[in-house]
Image (cartoon, rainbow, N blue to C red; front, side, top):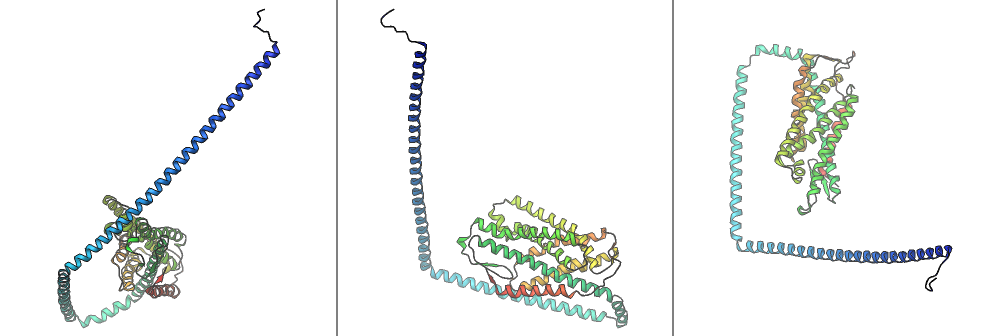
Length: 422
């Protein structure tokens, strides 16, 4: 055997192999540990670089904002200085222009007053002429026949006046309730943006500077009242579906309220899309195109018309508060007394309540309810005679409901005439 070679036993070779494998395993663990430490160190360095870069970016942003604010303030001061210098240089010119404008306004006011006086004299002349003509055509021999006709239709006239009066009062109370909810909703929405306000009977007076308004506040404040009114109208419609056969006048108040609620949403959407007032401010700040505004207007008109179609039967069913049955030939008389006349008189009373602070936008939205009143006034001819109860409860004044409604109307005008700060 050569002197350099050595023969190991089987177990010793296994022992050497195991030691070699352990050595390799420790070596790999050491390498992995070194690699992990290098990766952690690199990650820490990367985070530190990102943190440093973020801090530098924030500092640069703050510096840039301060520079922009300084430039903005400097530009405003320059504009003020230029305006003051212009006022000093052209003071005489501006005074002359103001005098000319005042003279022009005075002249226009004089011509308007003169035109109104001429129109008033013309109307008085026409009325006097027509009165004299009526007196000249009056035949005293027909007076007994006229008195007899009035006596024969006295009961019908009493029913018409009673139904119209009670429905008109509930119409006005329902409108003021929905309008008050809209005012409160807008005022509460303004509190989310730290806007203080005073609620009056006709509008909200905002204690906010013009430069404090921005897109989100305008959209929330002017869009929330119509949306809340629409949601309330949906709930009232659900409630009315359960009590529509009740004989109390409370269901008529709920019926008018849900109509005013839907009109507050769709009517505001229609008028706001056309004239850019009220709900239209939210539409403008949402950057809606003219085509979409036209689509909104068409949808609003169709929705109000369909609401009138679907509620026309409810107005006829409300006759069970006065009659045991409603024949087809009397339905036109009842619709006029229950819906059409209250709509006309109610809007007149609303204008008197809002006087002298009548807002054209609010009155226009209220008058858009005519889109729903038209199908109510026309669809009665398609319904058969209705029979409710065998017992006739009679047509008489319901003092309790009317007193509550009148008290609410008076309190609304008196309390909100002073103003509620919020």
